[in-house]
Image (cartoon, rainbow, N blue to C red; front, side, top):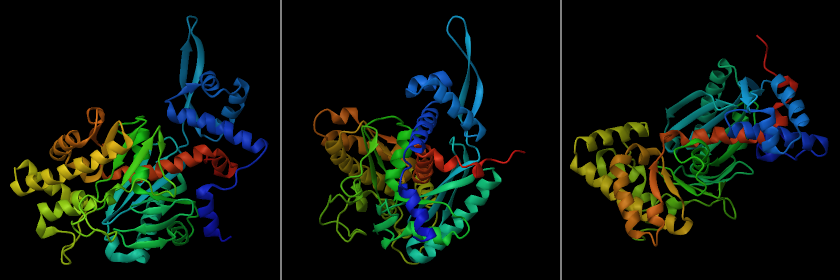
Length: 427
């Protein structure tokens, strides 16, 4: 196994330790997971919540404090006699998680530490389609190295990289099997990126952008904790991440949620997937731009591709000014958004449909049309229970989700960050 293959294999889940090591890993994970889900807690609180013996919690807490993965945050007083308890919280300021998203016209970055403190967040305009996979991977590696340097200056060393891609992904092996809007086929992205990163030897995980965004929304978004949730990307392409009973729905081969390719108009426009009339040809950002600003349509060869947010803000200004062409375009997209949403609600009965990207940026004009169509087309009472909600993460949800998946991997297997060589330097 090459070093690159080892890094990718580790990201997908290396063979778990057995015996005492497995028990220690499980117990450490229970403690860190509890602290991730709660602002803080005493050792006694953690023992009660996890079912671990207090002595076990105390011993492991000593080690976690020594490694600076948790920190003491004050004294809690419990009961009438005010017994003091030292509260602890997740820390790990020296352990970084780097999330990247590569999409049609940009690369996004979200870097955080173990506790979720944001260390770097940016978006770079980039013509991924016109650059092809080789140049795109070189640029992605450059952006990753720049982000790593920024995180190191903030005191954190990235322990893993997550990459969000608008594609069908073999997540276990880090392979992009088909990205219709990027024109990528069977690209071993994790292995190629690991190789391109050179001295930056960290595990690379690759997953679908909508899946990662859905997990970010479920963890800390506008509908956090909603057990039945659907997230829709609002990009040139449209993807969906489906949360059922608090867990991501992947399907038989990992391709669940490809709602952008629901056939809604067989006689409609051609789609990047090779078919006609897919839902994303009606509601994707390319469709809106074609209707609202035809002189800037994506398919025009002589048009320079700007940051997608710039295009969306230009449309928002036109809508606010009452531009009739833009208002009509948004109304039409909104109706198609509601139609596709009704199919999703009839299939999955979610409590909310969270919309990101440009859907969120234009929510005040777009969602009333979508909600009305949803109410008209959904069977039964589901329409009254389910609403479209605009994400607060904008275009950043997939890269945030990519960083979150690295944090989750570290918490699920804390032994990867318990090595004494990773101990932070004492100033």
